[in-house]
Image 1 (spheres, rainbow, N blue to C red):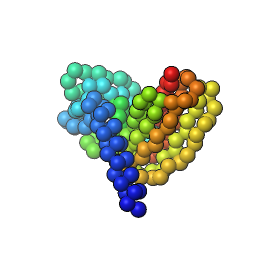
Image 2: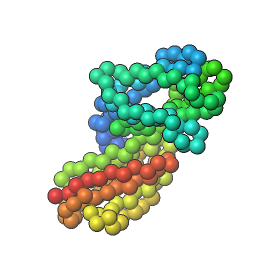
Image 3: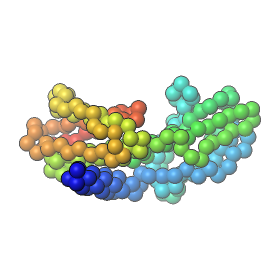
Image 4: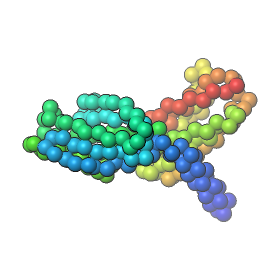
Length: 198
């Protein structure tokens, strides 16, 4: 039991270190500036690059943009053309995907300042063919990892424990040269990452 606990603590430290190493330009927070009529203004702090999208309740894409800035990102959206209802603002950085609720009633729009969901993307570290997959799994959802070789043949598929920190190492040092594809699924999202071996 001590060995398992020690391994879990080491794994947690590795995951946090990997996440922090990528968080410099990827983690962010939303600050609501104002809501006036059907117009909302907000800023995203701690990021200089982000993808923003607005969806309806059926996941129909209404608007999408890629934003880069030297300072914090500020946006104003005029939603006058949208009928009353619930919509979602999705903000996606290199590290995470956050979803915010937008509610339009009459001539008023409300944007929730707190995310209704946040999913951290997997972090892959390649050290000379030793690949470490790290996931900060806030929902503690089961994580399925599939690995495909350069010929797109599945060589590994496993559902890992539903823990807060999930990590797995892959030794590709003696594997065939080429592009390997990781398909990682958890919390209703699938992420595709590739690594090259030499």
